[in-house]
Amino acid sequence: MTEQERTLIAGCVKSDKAAWDSFVEQYSALVYHTIRKTFVTYHVDLSPDSADDLYQEFFLAILRDDFRKLRQFKGDRGCTLASWLRVVAARLTIDYLRSEKTQKIEISDNVPGDEPETLDSAIEEEQAQALFRVLETLPAKDRILIDLYYRQNLSPEEIAKILRVSVSAVYTQNSRLKAKLREILRKSGSL
Image (cartoon, rainbow, N blue to C red; front, side, top):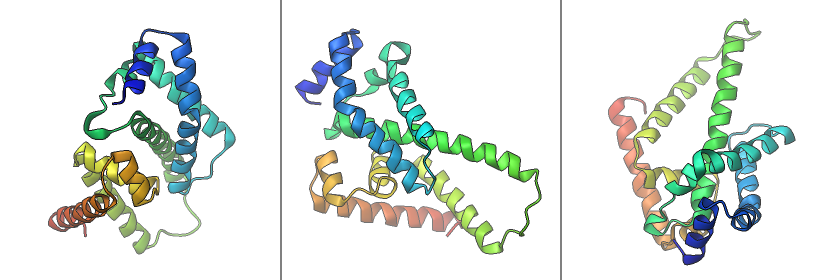
């Protein structure tokens, strides 16, 4: 964690209005961009209201419980405040999309469809669910790499800069992670 980040967080936690204003000004574009990019990544149409609501919810989540979430940031292993906030915003958006999907599933399960579900789509959904369950068991370091690489579609160069590692390290970690996921899915019979 840089000294500037430490000072900014300390000011926010002490309810310093100038620090909070600086925090919001410095990171608002990043948060909004991450929310929009997460919608695009999951192929969901983004309504301006949804994006604005999630944007507001993000900053409320940071403020909630006397800045509890902001206090959780440790800046370990070269993680910058910006990269951590990007992960928090993406997770908030993913949780929103999950709740929306659940609501749509509950409604559509009660209404017969016009076309029967194909076997291929059922298999793809089952594989996606198996992959999601496996991803949840991975260490945070691996989940961050997956989020940056596959959900946010960042380039290896951008990821290297965020994680403060070399580009070749990003390629190596990604390759090892894919092999690890393939092995876990193969052993579970999901692949």
